[in-house]
Image (cartoon, rainbow, N blue to C red; front, top):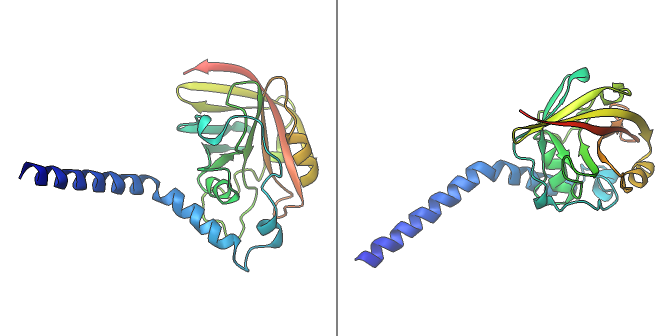
Length: 214
């Protein structure tokens, strides 16, 4: 009798655990699955089907090694407040899905606050396949200038970055540039340019200037 009750308890426990996990994470996995279906459909452009988000392998931490928690990117000058999201994996589908929840960290980026290049991706315009709330989050990214500041809040800390360069590059130039490693803690904010086109990229370079406990 005891063994039977114990088995029932285990079944209920694991069933409830699975249900809780699905309720918490099902939306993210559904986004990834939806992009996988879309990228293999005739409605996806050749560039989106065949190309990579960024065609290089970053040399920083693995996906699971970059703790972002409940992180928020704030760019006062252009009115941006967006969650910073780590993709579930390094696949194109996962990266695209992360940008439906906010701005996405490119897998392999350096850790926040550490030396190296932390790459953050965001949309500048809404494509027909996009279903998130951040389709235009980086629409004004090209308005940032030298000495403008923005910050990321995460885990009780505020990391303040100051812009020192605003580049407009081709996709190939973007890949070549972002594959290099800076000697300091640098964030690069990347989006398509101009609005409504993916022919070029806006790349904002910003250097860490302070780290505060809040």
